[in-house]
Amino acid sequence: MIYFALAKGRLAEESAKLLERCGVDTAVLRSETRRLVLESADGKFGFFLVKPSDVPIYVEAGVADLGIVGKDTLLEENRDLYEMLDLRIGRCSMCIAGFPARKDALTRPCLRVATKYVNTAKRLFFDRGEEVEIVPLHGSIELAPVTGLSDVIFDVVQTGSTLKANGLVVLEEVFPEITARLVVNKVCLKTKSEQLLPLIGKLREVVG
Image (cartoon, rainbow, N blue to C red; front, side, top):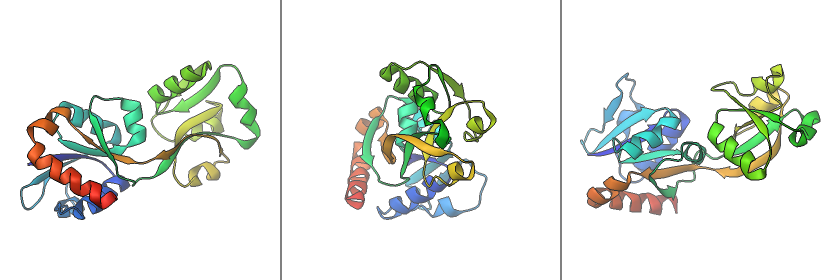
């Protein structure tokens, strides 16, 4: 059996559609269930629906052979696995955002940056030689500059509607092209190559 770790939510839905085009039976992903491990009716595939940040962990550990997760998560987690394909779904960008009148905040000393991408932000500003204070948050990142907790935020942006609703704008696109990637466990790619390589090849054809 081939096991997939999939990020919960919209990306899992897009991933299921993509896998279906490769002949993978993903009907079980559309069922209403509280089970944590799902198996296809033909017994060939298993699926773990987990938080995006957990996908690389499951794949690195070999619990899942393959995973589909955003490049933003891979940058943040920096796990020891193979990134095989850009699947061109889940498109977004990683940006620094804040109030339009505060664009000068980017040049102020010890900028306060709220983000859930703590490791990525630290590397980004270290490479720039900029001193910042990272404010780790796990949800409603846009609230930080609104309440004065931070000067700006560093987060993924898809439509920008949440930013706009809170009076914020993109001040800088740091990574303008973030998409979902297919990742694979390094050992599994060798030990289960007869199963995995044909599927990876089909995905490569479908993505184009």
